[in-house]
Image 1 (cartoon, rainbow, N blue to C red):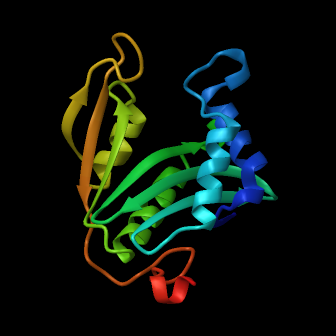
Image 2 (image 1 turned 120 degrees about the vertical axis):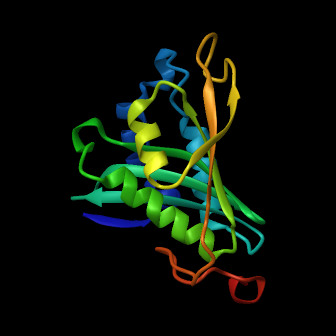
Length: 176
């Protein structure tokens, strides 16, 4: 298995994990992200700037993606927008590995905290996030639909050396 930064050419791999994890967008499962939304994030990851940045991490085994995480960094905050692991690959620590790599990347870019939303009944996700220092800071009623609330969670990021699958945090000077 190999963890690496994903790019625009990884759309099919990412969508494989998306559809297996959240259902088929074309069949009305609105929990899945569309190929258009994922392509925009993959394109943005390839064009990250110094102040804002996006990292999509992908865990690949034999050219098939097993897990994907999508992070968006602006100033002192990094959002975890999506983390997913194929159902058959769950329980092996891949989500934790993806989360830890994203947290290191964000800290290396100067982010001081990471935030996310998760369904308030997603026990596995809550266990993962709490084990990585996330605490609930608010609730968003109906975020996932009527009666389906989201918890907004936050974790501090330590100041540290730049570390990510992309190498050192980029600056405007070395990004050009």
